[in-house]
Amino acid sequence: MHELGLVNYVVKEVSKVAEENNVSRIKSVTLEFGEVSGIVTSYLYDYWNWYTKKYPVFEGSELKCEEIPAVTWCDDCKITYSTVAYGKTCPRCGSGRTWLLRGNEMRIKQVEVFEDGGEGSGELDAKGEYRP
Image (cartoon, rainbow, N blue to C red; front, top):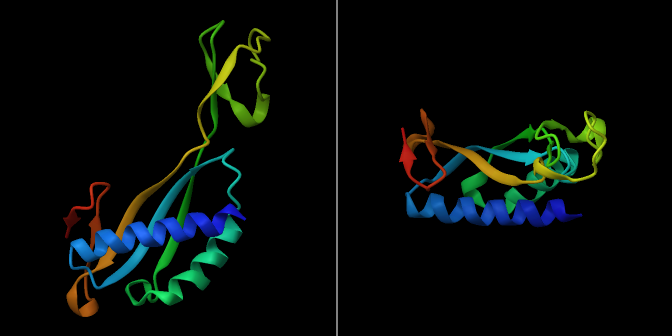
């Protein structure tokens, strides 16, 4: 159920950046999240479609999701490997002295916006700066 909280956070953050940059309509928002983050994509889409109706700036906007593969590091043999395939045990040396390198994170990767009048588009980058 944390997907609703994520959608709430993303909508509020993107709304703030859109307002600061005088953006009147969002075309799409792309999220990146880790393979082992526990995020259920279908819930994100459902909550996005329901929640964004409350905000005119998001009218007709699209949510895009990209998955970041989970990768684990082994302290003993100094390799990385697929977390999902092998879990916490290194497939090379059998060590349990491992830690998740990436695959549990979530971030707003890209926001695409309509330019005034609805024609054309641009992007808000990670710093909230507009690029046509």
